Image (cartoon, rainbow, N blue to C red; front, side, top):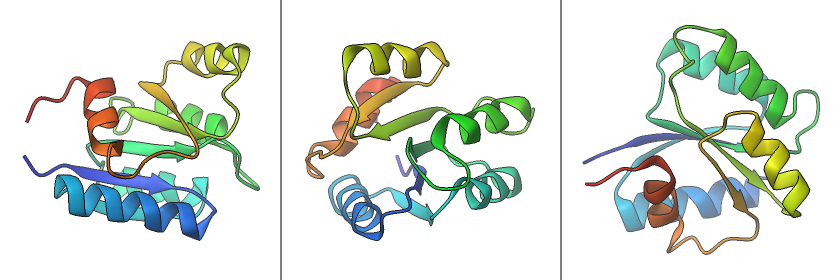
Length: 125
């Protein structure tokens, strides 16, 4: 099944690696946003099947963006997976406590990323 994923990260290299892995390995459609504000606009206009959201971004960080997605009825049900370089157990628990679908550590293997996402979201294609 073709999934549509929004990747939100201020790092162009991360966006490119994620896009390549998801498009080539899984055949999914990938949309890109460089910040939380753009992600909110894109999700409100046409909610994706899932959002991969960087935790640490300037202006509006991942948790703030996630909070705003949760506040809107149109985007509340879109699953969000945080991407983060900070994967200490306490931080992971804090992020998961917000209600995100999962937390993935950077760096990651782009070849296994679609399987990791599918596992976290319970997708069975």
